[in-house]
View 1 (tube, rainbow, N blue to C red):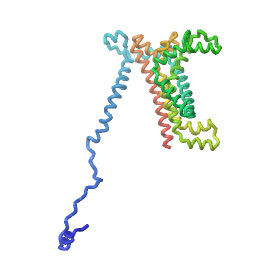
View 2 (view 1 turned 90 degrees about the vertical axis):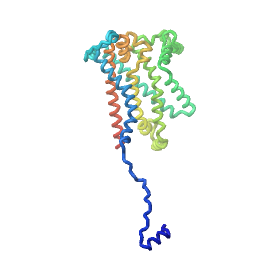
View 3 (view 1 turned 180 degrees about the vertical axis):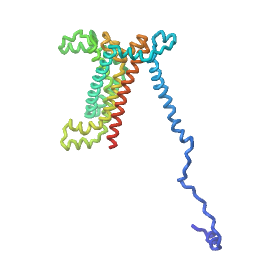
View 4 (view 1 turned 45 degrees about the vertical axis):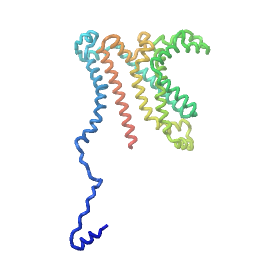
Length: 329
């Protein structure tokens, strides 16, 4: 709005004073050196932690696997490099390959049992009424949270030859042949008990993960499948399976990693016995390293196990990227 003084100045032929310029919000601020460095400074603590907790111990393990590190070298501090001799010794041992095959078969069976039982439990939780579902979920959490050593002790008592409740129950049901039956008499039976123990502890986590995927499916999709005349199996394949397939892939690879390197349950039950028939690769590495004081050979076994896990991880990343490509398309 023009004031009276401005009008008078314009009539007198003079130029009116310019109005002050208001700074706009679009004024750009130059990006300084601190702004460019700040993201890297924020990432630095995480990188240091990863390097200290993962990279440095792995590097030390690699160096140990190329050394002769028995009890004598450990005490005297003598540094003896042997190159690939530890790997040659381990890979040339027939016992190593027997234990490797046993470990892979044991891992595959336990993972398959875990996934099948967990999938059934997840589908069951979706169909139960809220009260029964909460009771089941609390039971699963308690089973999952129980320490491995305590659970192993309970299972040893259940399958005990003389005082085990399983043999007594089977006897009451009419199976008199199980009186005094030893569930730890051979490697296959011992690994079966250990597999049941590991599966019992692993099912809750996998079941909750799959259940989270199932409840994320909108109810309208199930209603639409019912209107189209789809049965339970067809509804599961068309509606539920696409929702839980990515989660199932993740928990499968996690279970493979966990069951491949499981040690506590196998060692606590029979220390790899009887006669080494239930020995797996982690137990074999422990017997070579801690019990046998051949830390170089144990380092070579650990590196071989690490390479197997890296191959599995690479396969998982490949599947994950492939699924991302499908989603993008």
